[in-house]
Image (cartoon, rainbow over all chains, first blue to last red; front, top):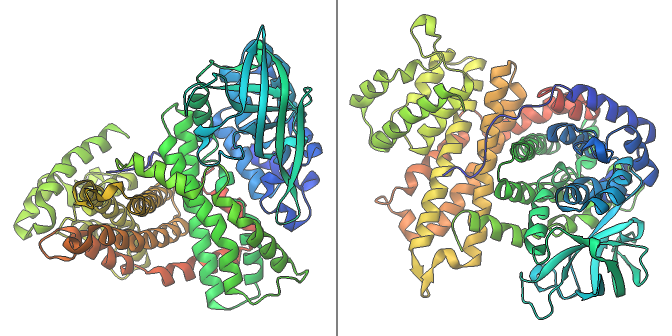
Length: 378
Length: 242
């Protein structure tokens, strides 16, 4: 039994040049505040996104016809791991660049592609994902938001929740029940909904840090043209779960606390305590391993092979790692969490948000269930 | 995987499986026939001329089958003189690969066992608590395998001090967690001499301490990262693979 691909990763020759470009851009326009550099892919800075677009660093693998740059998957991987390691504010475009763009290019009709994709590649058009509903969390197949046919149009009614970035997004790709009376995975379709369509309203949900990242989104008789259907009618479940595997194993799944690890190293430069030094070693070993694992999955994805199981394993291990860092740092170093001191303030912030790391994008329990099925259990 | 490496794996796998943990000194001739002890000796000197990924393949399979004969140690000794730093580092790499193999074997054994063993009218593998433990185990085994591969690639590139330290430390932690879960899901049968689980978990325990335990490598790695400084960590990490 070998559960994980261990083929060598063939890093692109352009990697050093791409890294240098990203580092220069981040040094000039990135986030200064180390606390805001933590968990950076939830921090929206539309101006930074626009600059990335201008530099040709968004939509990197997309066709030139739609404003993309036709670079390889691993070249894109190099760029995103650099952005995340540096704590760049990539939240505004993150979902568009990671999954909505690829999804539209794969399944969208010409009208949808022409309308949305070039703006995403420029870093000017942002997207959100409509999956969870008040009664559909981990049990996604129970969604009830409905799409009803009316002549040549679709009429949407219902509600999505925990929608990250709905308030800065231009459109949502939502999983919706398009066949009345259908059950579970049957009768679901994906729709592209402009956030400014009449009948769409957004209500903020403030998280426990006081930040506004997610929202409730309501649909009241939202009328969409036939062309708003993404992919095939009734294939929404298959399409959405394939999309989810795209978002599982990226470097954002282990780098959310990297800024704190770096602050720990900075602290250790003047702290001789052996437990601190051991902790640096242990966390460095994990970072190195997770980087290899995440990149191996990216390489497998680039070869067009099925990577779903490995991607799930990377997310589970990566989340455990980024979640453990603030706990371990707090345990190893005496600090006053309410002080302005850098190490303490980054630790305090990450201790607050770390519980979300093993919830977002599939809870730990759901992931472990997927892995167990892959092992031949269940 | 290259053709030579596939051939190497196809030779070693069934032979190690046949010899297993009960192999004795009289079985050395079988390993000699395939030239395995000379795996890393250059072809010009009559050896196999393998690279470090070839070594990983053989070491991992030796771990997977809990090979009783110390073939791995003999290959390590062919590479560097005992007592030297080079020997210690290469030994740590070898143990990382063996741990990766033994974890995969113990995982397969655990999965097979829980699918077969019935309690409360259903296989143990149907219980979520058991499934989640084995999922954790699979992730640890995957991490050890990737770490071993990363170290092998670094050795092929040249200086691999950082990677060997990181890989052995990661594999050590996986060895401990994997052995714990393997025993837990096996229940009492895994605690008997008759059942072969201890052939793997016993080796995992030993290998975790061989050529540097957790404390040794975390100190080594920690010191080296701190010495380079916070701002060098990420650029160093990426420069090693670019």
